[in-house]
Amino acid sequence: MSTPLRRVLVSSSAIQRNVERLRELAPAKDTMVVVKANGYGHGAELAARAALAAGASWIGVADIGEALELRDKGITAPLLAWLHAADEDFVEAIGRDVTLGISTVAQLRAVAKVGGGTVHLKIDTGLGRNGIGRDQLTEFLDTACALHSSGDLVVDGLMSHVSGTSRETDLAQAEIFVRTRDLLADKGVSPTHLHMAASAAAIDHPSLRFTMVRFGIAAYGLAPTASHRNLELAPAMRFESSIVNVKRIAAGDGVSYNFLWTAPKETTVVLVAAGYADGIPRAATGHAHVEIAGVRYPVVGRIAMDQIVVDVGDARVNASDPVGIWGDPKAGTPGVSEWADWADTISYDIVTGIGNRVTRIDIP
Image 1 (cartoon, rainbow, N blue to C red):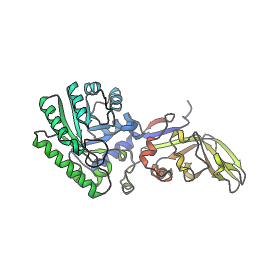
Image 2: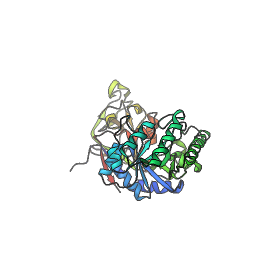
Image 3: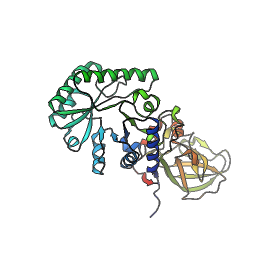
């Protein structure tokens, strides 16, 4: 069987070691690892199993569909899903023991109508995205507590998310979170799980760990911010393709659309079978490099849908040679953060943008 033309090699053992390391850096009673968006592009089931092997007690996803896919694949650990359609049908999720992050009064009533559901109340402490806002907070808490008391649902958790704008902003958000926890206690409800810190906040702010922390991008060995690039984490993904054509071109010859690059001298260029349809950001045109046999070479000309062109100078290379697009910089491959810099974006955008014709392969 031939090697897949475009492939992502994912190390489940690297994810496991990263989660173990993160639990040392930011210990809490419970650890959730988030595997939304197909495990940040790494594969949700693979990431979930590696995280649980490392001692994580919860798995987080964005929506119910992602949670049910994990249940279908035999993941029995506690699962939390928190992003729902306005007319979400909670029947199957509740029947399959998926805990629901709830952000509106209408969602509370919908869960209660089904009966038997477990919820984490999601409050907006200042990020301005999902979660109940301050103008509806009183009604939301009153409704939740009443339904908890009547047995129509179980309030098992309270959750939020910091903005990461500054230490002062994050701590101010935490004060709102604590006040909300106290309001619930005054009403006779004390949720077991309290969580608002994702990777960066969990590492930086011990006071924000409460009873559970949520690790996302860091679990995959990628820094949540530039200030977190020295955490002894190992990138779990290597994105590879292969050389499919080798040719010698003359000085002045142009390459790819619009001839953004012309050869300054006679050189060898190689065609690599991966492009923006596979997740290579077109915005990195003119900046990107790749690795061949441990050596970095520049990507030249416009990044196209299916292919890139690489200037290898006078190096001896052959069709079928593997090309490292991104991976572990310690092995000479450009890192995901470098690609993010080249494309003026963030690492999250790079790894979650991998196209569906790229084959994922689990490696040790």
